[in-house]
Length: 633
Image: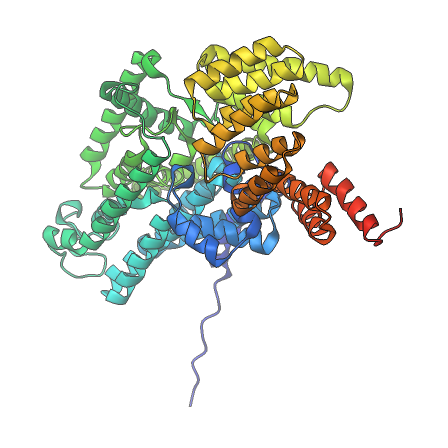
């Protein structure tokens, strides 16, 4: 009996995935040496007390109930908690995991496109550009971009599951798709437009819509007659229900975080103009990725009307071209509407914050532009050798250029200094970049006195620029006041702090800055009063209790200091490592003064564990050990 031998494995099938992986390695390997940045990373990771504790039942519950940072993305929190539990809170581990998720996304994108189109080279081009394009640096090189890469992972898996469901008519795969969609929404709500996207994919490449099929292709991709339009909509009703539910949830979360802007500040007409302009800028940044920044200030009433009209003309022109070609090339209209439709939730019609646009918003919508670009030349034209060779050379050149540009853009994410300097260089009136650069420089003082003097001048320059742009921003005023206090200009510092307190009388950071100012001047009663107001303003935050306990201890009000310190300890998950060490150090001192040596020693050990470089905690720990006779004097 003759045995049939299996055909040899085609190793060329590994070439495209290998090239995608190499492209990602070339562009993103540098992130393993990158630091946290002071643009949300401290809120998500570096100063987040929950991540310091790691995965636990309490933190699992917290992840599903918190609207922290104006978002609701429990799966993103759980992934960060898992990383912190396994690898600690070092930036390298979080960066590496982001790159890993991006690699998975790129490979899955290649796989799902090739699965349904049977066009491996075009699918490879789209996936490779997705892997290396500089617009995606923000979603991958930014630790806080975890929500983008994670939601996209499950979003792409949902699309692939839908393809399998359609091809096999298997409701098991429909359930898999629903599960992946839910996981994507639990990571970030960017994929709320998935039901509409799947309707586009029904048109092409699935060919389930009659109007999107040529006369030569009367059947669907499975060879069957196309279903009715009503069936296609009914089929996606569960997806629409989830989209509506999560859209409401994220709107409430953003509103609770103060991100939703009023019509008074951003009128509807201005929002529409900025949306049109943003579409044009996203197209420009896709094909000519220059002047990329982490923060793009909203232009407001200074928006360029000529640029709006140019963007509108481009949008109308491409739309008309895609409609004209849709009978013969439906993929062009599908790609164009993929780009346009997936940006709708973040295009600014509902204005969140004061940014005009953001690179991270293009992580998935850009796939539509790549699809349009890679399917622009009809298949019959590519049968001509000169056309095929020319198109291939152009594609390789463009991929090489994007790889180089991607590497350079990722390099700007090395630390807050490089990131904010880049933003200042390529944007105008960017108060937030000036403020964050000053903050970075203040937290990284120069060692030499001459360099420190120059650095303070630079800090003053950037804070002055931020103040000119936003003269009534409490963050800018309070940070500028701290600088003036440090250089001895106390009267001007107090004036700025008082103005900040008038603007935001119940703001935690302003009240703490005010208390710090009085404490540095040894005006303890005023400092304690400011800290008490901070406690009243944010009773669930541990930081005002830390400062109040330290001030009470300094005033020798030891009993109340101990009670307040215990309240700070109860809120330890809201503190970064330095302030957690502060409160443990205070509790250690108070216990030692009460002759509770063992308890004091334990608190000093906790302080050093949270911040190994804390000078007072280390000194106090050594003294406590000497008192117990555990180390030589």
